[in-house]
Image (tube, rainbow, N blue to C red; front, top):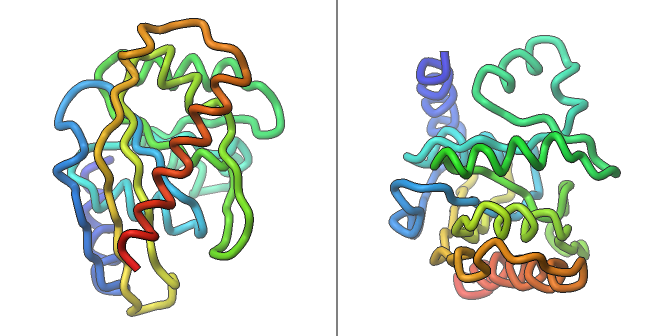
Length: 194
C-alpha cells in the first residue's frame, strides 16, 4: 500500500507544484536518523514523505488518526500518533524504536505549524529522542508559498551526529539548548538561500 500511495501522491505533487530539492545527499542512506524540518503547512509532511528517497516515519498529532480515510492512510504509511500538550511516553518509545531499527524518523521540532514571520521555538523532545537513540539529525527547511503551481524548495543541511552524547542523561535545560541549536540550524538554511 505504501509504495502505491506514495507513487500516486508524488505524481500529483509534481503536477501541482514546481519541486526543487537541494542537498538530499546529506540524508544518511542507512542507520537511524531524524529529519528535522520547519512546519508551515499541512503539505510539509506530504512533501517529505513522497519526495525524499529515504522512507520517513513521521510523528503526527493523534487527532489526525481519528479522521475517517485520512486516519487510515496515515496509519498505513507508518505515521506515529503523538498526543500534544502532554508527555506522550508511548510515542517517544515508538520513535526511539524506529531509530534503533535503523529507520528514518520525521519530526517538526516546533510541534505545530508556524507561518513565515511568526515566532517559533523547539520542544526539548527532539533532542531527547536523538540522544536516547544516538541518532544523527538532519536539518531541513521547506520554502514555499504553498499556492498551486508555486515553487517548493526543500533545503537539506548536513547531519549532526548525536552518538557523541553516548546516550547520556541530560537535564531538561541541556536538552532544550540542544533542541534550540537544531532549530537555529533549520532556519539558517533559509537565510543562506534567500
